[in-house]
Length: 164
Ligand code: FEO
Image (tube, rainbow, N blue to C red; front, side, top):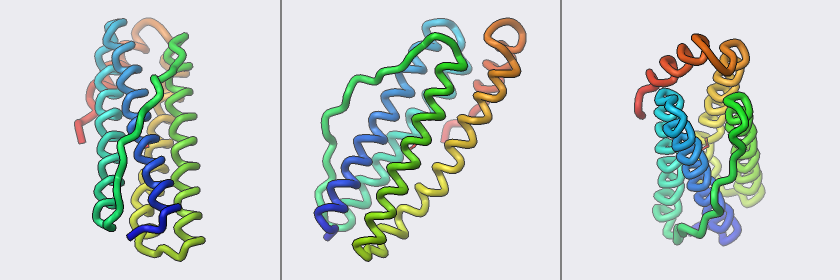
């Protein structure tokens, strides 16, 4: 059984990951609407990954004999002023998720919960990758610009992302 504090915070992380999934799905819908299918594809794959992250945590909570909870989610809120603005939000959101994961690790350490500490290491590593990916796309967008051949190349590049 998990310590109740650990159980509560892990369940909060389930909600964070589910919110991330909905946020990226909403962004994908924006891109589908403006006809940038590569961007839409990349964000849909990302949304699926986030749902998988949530389920990875619920499975762990259950494995520990505690109760995983799927709570209510806020409506995803994003600004759609430009591609740069959208991917800045992706990066900031991933930085926020990294902080949440680090707080979970801090709690596991303070509770001497070695199993949860070990479980969370996968997420610590994953977040380095997630921030790197979002940062790379943001940089490429700054080079490619918001219109024209550069943007079309970006769309093709993002379309090539393999589903996990
Ligand atoms: Fe599951 Fe992108 O954090």
